Length: 311
Image (cartoon, rainbow, N blue to C red; front, top):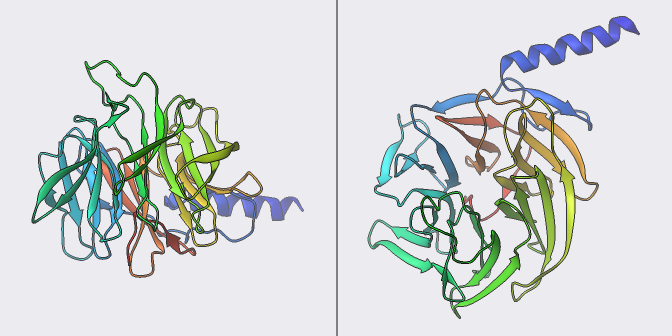
């Protein structure tokens, strides 16, 4: 029994040192393919906002005021556009156009090569938004985003809270989903789009809401508290897979959560503090991770879904 336990410990230690690191697994085989974590881009100031457009990974260097595109197998990432108004999160609308959560402007925008930058929404009830952080789009076009104060700089908050919003671009209708989270950050929809997940960086928690057709929400509930003493990193970016598991940055790296049971299934270490993540690759089974100056990729045994990843 002692020998078996020691061999199991040694195998886990070796995996952690390899970098593709399964740090906690309560369900058998790891979702992450062992030793597949790799560095794909480096040399930036603070990477964020990964989104897969079907062929390329789009990501931001927020302080660098630039958005990049990485095409696997084609060398270093190329500048997609600059200046970016310190864009943070990105996603794709139903037509595959890039949406951007901008820190400096306090706006959600759309960017296309042909038309450049277009403001989608920048105020709630006549008051300027703080600094939109992350954004997703429902299959009917409803835009959902978080609005913490991280990018306010010297500006004072006009809305007076950190919000989670739904915005119907066609009608201009804006719905405040939640104003009680301290630092709402990453967000994602369940595969059936009936549940909205939002991470709160200040409390290292993941929350769930039942989302109605009109964008209103109810049934707010705590999914899991991922606080981990002594571990660096924060609850930030959030994604889901086709089976409904939730993937998010967390203290210690990347966490995989079963939202139905409210339990942590795995915690994978990343060499630098992870900020966000996105599904990519032909089968949406690669998970791209932004982490401070770097971008990483890890192979998984899952299949991603969501508006931030197109086939």
